[in-house]
Structures are given as C-alpha cells and as structure tokens.
Length: 365
Image (cartoon, rainbow, N blue to C red; front, side):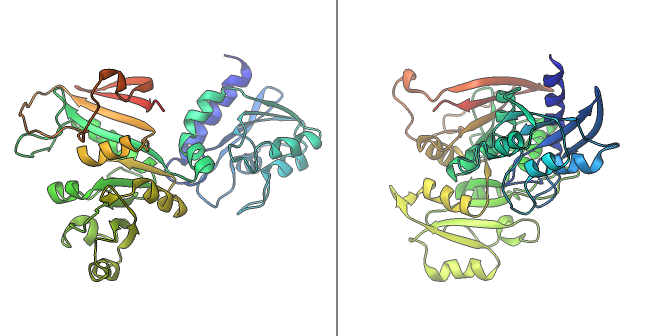
C-alpha cells in the first residue's frame, strides 16, 4: 500500500463516524499531512455541519500552508449550508489534494477539482476509487437517480424458512446477528415492510443500538388499508415517524384517521392492483430518504426484486432446519421458471457471526 493509499484508507475510517447522522449527505473524511506528519483529521459529523475538509482545517495543530489534504470525495464547489470547501482549501494555501472519487452529482462533478487547479493546487484523483464508491453507495444512487438505495435484509433457516409452519419467527438468528441488523437500521434513513409483516409480528422497527442517534422512518406498504390502528408503528410516533403507502382503494376517511394521529399517508397509483413501488420510491426520495432497509416478507421482497428496485442483499442464515410445506420463505411471488433466469448477486462477501452466517452482495442489474 502506498502512502497515498494509506492516508485515503484513513479517510474512510473517519468518514464512517458519520454513519446514521449525515444523510442525505455523503460520508466524508479528511486527513492533512505536512512533512510526512499528520497535522489534522476531520469528518462530516452531521447533516448541516462542517464538511470534512473544514473540520480538518479547524483541527490543524499548525499552519496547513504547503500541506497535502487527503479526502475520499471531491471537495464541494457550491454554496449550500456551508461555503465551498474547494475555495477554502485554496485560501488555506495547501499544495496538494489527493481524492478518491469525483462528486457523482452530474451538475457539480469536477467543478471542485477545477477550482483547486485554478488556485494552483496539485490534484490527484482516483486513489482507491472503488472502495470510495462502495462506502458512499447510498449517496451515489440517490444523487444520480433521485431514488433511495434499497438493501434487502432477510433472516432464514438452513432450509430457507423465515418462520415455522404456524408462523413463529422469534428468533431465527442469534443475538449477535440481530445486533448487526440494528447496526444496519442505524445506517439507513428508512425501513420498509409490508402490511402482512405488521399484522403478523407487530414490529416496532426501531434501532435498539447503543449510541444510535435516530430511528429510521418506518414505511409500511399497504395497498388496501388493512393496517390496524393499535399496532406499534401507528402508536409510537414519539419514537419514529411512520409513512403508510396506500392506493386510492383506501378511503379518505380512513386516511384521515391516521393523519390525525400524526401518521403520514401517501396515496400511490396502482400497478397490478397494488402500490406502484417505483412511484413510492420517487416520493420517498423527494422526502430526502436516501436509503431504505427492506425487511419485508416474501410478497413485498419479491415485488421489489421483480421491479428491479433492490440494490443489495444482506441474507442472514441460521444453522437450523424447521421444515413445513407451508412455512414462509424470504422471497415468494411467481418466481422464475429457469435457473438461468435467477436473480444473481455480485461482489459477494460472507461473514460468520457466532453460529450464524451472513451473505452480502449487490444485485446484478
């Protein structure tokens, strides 16, 4: 690993401190090096706060003139909640900026680099670029399409069941695997389930993680308005916001009952008699929900996959066998006829968590 790669790797570590706090902004870290010494580090702490480069400049232990700044994302060039970082670096008289990837926003990509170069700053880009893209995969999808990044999470037994034949699902995996799920809930701005899951399990859909700064927005897909009024996602608005995704099949009177209780109701067009899921994601994106953890049952999971709306899969597998012809599976629906037509995952990674396993991969588009 080169020196440039070593310091860029450190920016990734710093950037991750912003997980669950900066959405819909990207995760960014910065390191300032002078005379082969690190004189400052910084990261984007929260949405609306100083960007990583400014945070690092403020933390500098000595003058940064002539220093090299390492950052995992191109310094911004626009006036938003904070002034442009690229201009601030030029003003600070740094001599060199090493970055991983350009800003993926087509309207701003490369403009920060142009400002730096016009200001006499040497720029090197593309260091560990793939890793940088993986780190900010949620931001990249959201800023380029307006749609939230969707990660589907499932937990199943060795024989592919998410519950027993009588519907019991507590618990498929062990405590440590479930703790990792709460880490994921902290990472994503929204969590989505179908109404069948709410009726069967009455989940709270909150993040039970020490130090978590927020709970994700709870999104329930309910085409016909079958959700009861006494479930946790309806009666715990002080813990997290809830959005109910209906179609026009749900009467205005019923929607008003939920609206008066502080629940947001969205009325979506129908697709084959159900909520148009792509239209739903577009509306959620406009609400600054940049990423969604999909924890649906087999019906919703299949519908999302069939619509091409799932970007990544986290599949937890427990070494248990429950059997049962009618036991539920993570993905149901019509399915494919031929194995060659199966949905494939790429960039697959595996992890063991005590007795359980997790398979993670990107959905091949």
